[in-house]
Length: 481
Ligand code: NAD
Image (spheres, rainbow, N blue to C red):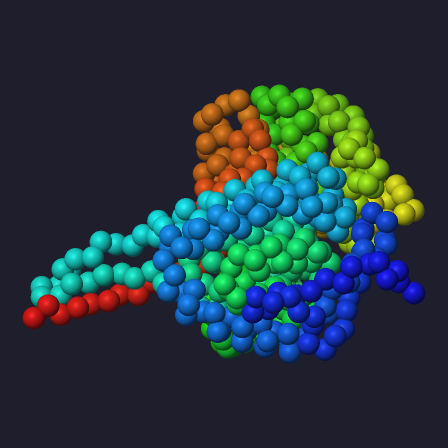
């Protein structure tokens, strides 16, 4: 019997907090302990229909607001996030198992993104109106799409939701958003705050899993665009399903970011960078530094710095205090998946230099792990694990670095570490990834686009490119006589 003190959270539909239509609930678990910390509605198609009806009712009113009015409301949302930052961070830490320090760092980023899109709402641009044919004036209107369906992942639940909600609302769309069934708590709390600020039906948040709710959003005729942040297989399913109604699809999918370390790089700086970039959020980051390609002249020196740096990471339950730097992975299933990759890699001859096991009987932990002795074709090099594991490959010939970096199905992010600006820029040009860092790995900005190539998907989050993705352009041609 569950404790009656476990909170039962509600969806936001049409400006009102509501239980699911059929009343079923799902337990939400703290991955650091395995304990149930909340219950949320377990949605069905009936919840999808109700949310779309509410969005439909709000659509025209929101479309007809001015950019300046939308800006004011997005700024109010940003202020609400700031005012509740500690509370939202605590929910994020509890539900994702991330250290409180990391969760607290994410909140100002969330409010900054809301503020960026508040301002960007007033900057939509298009070609100049004019007489492109004699006797006619042509102009381009940039319009919202209508109802946008948005589906979020579990790794940065609130931030990923805001990456989606902010540009969509700024452009004048209304939203039906489904958080991950594993981590809906912070987004539901954000929805409660939004209910006090936004007109009813402009933002609707409904919980449930992919088959129960996600599929219904994707297939619905009233939804003009579906935007997913999630795994590559889910992205492919959604693109296939969306083809039936030819709705627009925006896909931010997985990655397997390479880190090219040329012989002239500073091994200590690279190790310090990887200590963060490979293990932040337990490596559950689509841009995590997952596979290092090190030149022959720096390989040994890099490992001498990297192994103790990674061993020094303090793993544990974030509730145990500020010293904890890395929490668990999200679920027993994810833990099994990551440990399975490690087992198969070592059976095939790979060597684990540190980590390699769960390291705790309680919760869903995987120790921070470094793997060497792997070939380019190994599954641990080719596939996204989404856990605290980095492979380090020795380059026999540094000229192969870019080709090896590009030789995976993904194309989200990459980095190159060198003091030679010419080599760095040449690598930037040739790397097939949506973001390339030089002498760093992981930072992102509200003003700059984030999104992948190849099987990492298409469409951009952040920046004015995201705003463009949530609009359509219409040519209006007026005869003058
Ligand atoms: P997932 O694909 O399992 O689930 C993502 C969301 O899709 C969830 O809300 C889920 O319920 C829903 N879903 C699942 N199947 C669906 C279907 N058939 N139709 C509609 N919705 C469906 O991904 P996840 O495990 O939650 O997140 C981890 C993945 O997300 C990783 O691959 C990671 O790289 C990726 N990710 C990418 C970015 C990026 O910006 N590119 C950012 C964060 C995470």
